[in-house]
Every structure is written in structure tokens, then in C-alpha cells.
Image 1 (cartoon, rainbow, N blue to C red):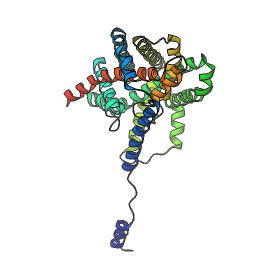
Image 2 (image 1 turned 180 degrees about the horizontal axis):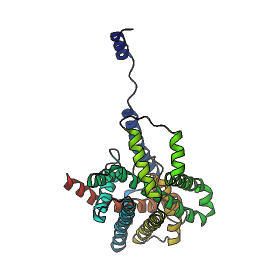
Image 3 (image 1 turned 60 degrees about the horizontal axis):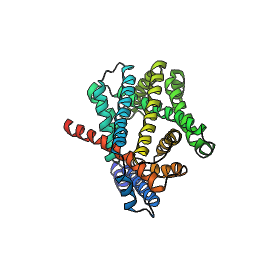
Length: 328
């Protein structure tokens, strides 16, 4: 076959569907699922019901909840900084806090275009010139935060037999997965053993890039003191989220004992990790209805509490949009 014939054959062959189209369908499916869940949960509810709840809301308690959102972000920025420092990458805490705000803005308002973690990686890499270390810090932080969430949720499951029976596998799976990844990436011997089995194609220096990120992640996770502190601050973060929700309930005049917040909120946060909707919409509200409906809240009250939680986080994240606009 001549080269001309080969060219004609390639041109006449049906083109494979581009990956972008597949990703487009996935991006479309997630908001559809979220909206569908919300519509299902809101069936029979009236706008006046939500207006009545909002009208009675305590501004001081909502102010405390809003302040706690800022505290949670400062804690997150600080534990991120510790993972950068262990790699000898120095970034001021205010810069990392601003990066978190920008990432949060992207997660809340531009979820289909680019993830907040990617924004944070790009921000630190641009500031320091160290891409692999930036990626490794975010990967390590996410892994340790997820592991801390599994630990916190496990505490909640231990307080409820029914919840442990229904969601024990989810929390247990998160625990095993994150612990396995932490041990894999933190153990040089284990990492090298897996590396000998998994061969990446050396396209666009992929092998070198992935190797650099894995090595940097391993550096983060091979410092027990740093890992312990990051886990501690991750648990502080999750407990702060519990407090935020508790003050939202107080603001709405809803009688939800703190122990139920401690029991349910970490489990809800774990459920939200399921990548089936945008920003957890629908999934989060359904979990609030399921758990807090069982302790006396109506569906409208549970959904209103969930939406207010999202609104407070979104309000703070607007500052990230301003920061991003000023940087351009």
C-alpha cells in the first residue's frame, strides 16, 4: 500500500469520538442529577415556608457561623502551608488563604470549567516556580483531610447503630482507601515496588512529571510530625464545620442538640464526596433531610439549613472572585 493510499484510508475511516464530548456529557449529567434531587426533595414545599424560616433567623448566630467559615479556611491554609514547608517551599499564609478563597470561588461558581484544587496548584506554582511540589502539597492535604474525615465520621458512626449499619461501608471504604494511598505514597519501598509494575507511557514527559509529583508527595508523607499535625488540624477543620452547622440551627431556632451535629455532619461530608452532583447540591440536602429529619426537623427546615450552609460558604468565596479578578 502506497503512502497516498494509507492517507486516503485514514481520512475515510470513522473518527473516534473525542474525549471532550464524553467529558461534556459527564459535566452535564452532574448538574442534572443535583437539580433533579433538589426538585424531588422540594416537591410539595412552598416558597413561603422558606421565607418564614429566613424571616425568623437570628443575624448574630448567622454572623458567628459566617466567622467560623473564615476560621475553617484559615485552618486549611495553615495545614497546607505545613506541607509546603516540609518540601522547603515557603509561601506566606495570607497568600495561601487567598488561594483557598479563589479555589473556593471556582468550586462554587465555575464548577464545570476548572477545579478549585487546580487553581490552588497553579497559584502556588506560579508564585514559587515549583509545580511538582505544589501538586504534591494539595494531593497530600486532600488525602490527609479525607482520612481525618473518615476518622471523624467513624466517631459519629460509633454513636449510632442505625447509621453505622447504613453508612458504615461508605465511611469504612473512605478510611481504607485514604489510608492505603497514604501508606503507598509515604512508603518509598512500597512506592518503588508498585512503580516497577505500572509503566506509564513517556508521552509529553508524563513519566518524569508523575515521578516528580509522587516523589514530592512521598516527601510530605514521610514526616510523621507533619502528618500528625496536618491530621490534627484537619480534624479541627471538620469540627469547625460541625460548629458552623450548629450555629445555623441556633440561628433558625431549631432545637438540634450538638451531639447530633457531631454525629451527622461528618457522615454528610463523607457522602458529599460522591462525585454525582455539582458542589454537592441535592446530595447534601437529601442527607440533611434523611439524618436531621430523623431527629425532629421537617424537610423544609433541613433543606433550608443545608442551603444556608452553602450560602455562607459561597458568600465568603465571593472574595476569591474579587482576588482572582484583581490578579488578572
